Length: 73
Image 1: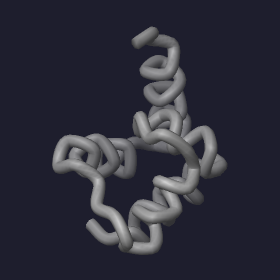
Image 2: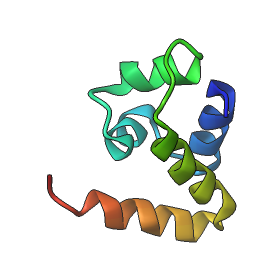
Image 3: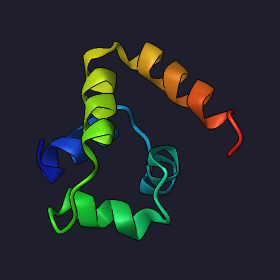
C-alpha cells in the first residue's frame, strides 16, 4: 500500500490528518504527512488495519476508529 492509498482512505472517511495520526498512534500529523507522501512507511500491522478499515462501510469504519480511540494507553 502506497502513501496515496493511505491518504485516499483517510479522505474517504473524511478524517483530518491530526485525528488520523492520533488513531494510527503517530506522534503528530507531520508523521502522517510523511507516510502519505511516501517518505516514511507504516508498519505491516498498521497496513492490515488500514486495509480492513477500507473494506468496511464508512459508518462501521468510523465506529471502529471511535471505539479504538476510547482505549487509554
